[in-house]
Image (cartoon, rainbow, N blue to C red; front, top):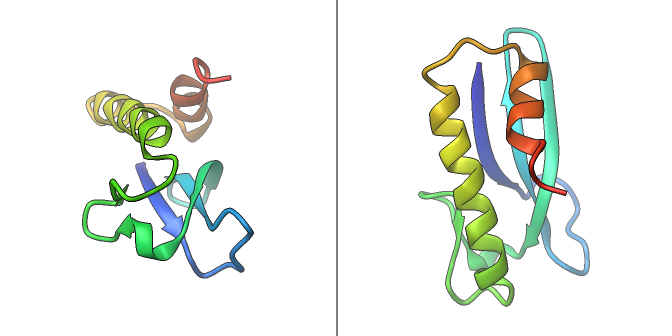
Length: 93
């Protein structure tokens, strides 16, 4: 299973920008959850993180880093896609 955080600029942008998704991929399953918004010019494609010029940087960055830390913990364990989704998103409301 692979978990990633990406700015999906293939879809139409909204007034807030493009959607930032937490994506779970397994053999033949995929789940995703929108975790924020960002315009293309405020997103670093190499690191998959918002730039400091992003208007909501101080609120968005801690959320993304928390998800990345949980993803790193998951890489050492065997989870189904449903278990991983619940584990990462359960604490955030």
